[in-house]
Image 1 (cartoon, rainbow, N blue to C red):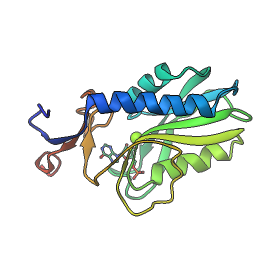
Image 2 (cartoon, helix red, strand yellow; image 1 turned 90 degrees about the horizontal axis):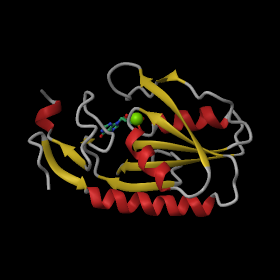
Image 3 (cartoon, rainbow, N blue to C red; image 1 turned 30 degrees about the vertical axis):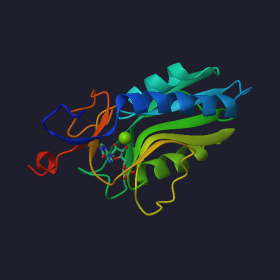
Image 4 (cartoon, rainbow, N blue to C red; image 1 turned 180 degrees about the vertical axis):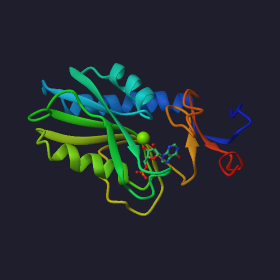
Length: 180
Ligand code: IMP
Ligand code: MG
């Protein structure tokens, strides 16, 4: 069901997202059972909807915080990322789970992983909603929602020029929209 005229096709339905979020939450609950200082770090803006669903599906006690990033220039192609909002507190000795919307070339997650690892958390893992099918980009993804084709996708927090974020499913954007 793809109802928006700018969309090529639905890649992940609302039902599939909800079922997968519940499964991921179960895996995370099991992995962190007994951990009393779990911190979920959501990356703004793309991860805000995934984060909201995931955090509410977790049974394990945890806190949430957010970081906001921007990339230099229009795309992340250069791999240069800049922090525009950092965490509020040190993460030393905390169990940190990084929550990202999407891994494309892997620059963003690699950058964040290095940055947070250097702050000496007790542990550092990553949870990613979707990952594009690409040759290995060397990013450690511990909890993954879905692997999708290498196309531009929107919905469930993902945008194109700040649009389409609130679509409740993940869909491929028509090439005619972003080549305009
Ligand atoms: P990477 O650094 O190449 O892995 O790119 C990751 C970032 O680029 C994500 O956090 C998104 O902000 C953005 N991005 C990459 N692919 C898409 C897409 O298909 N739709 C929306 N945003 C994307
Ligand atoms: Mg992002």
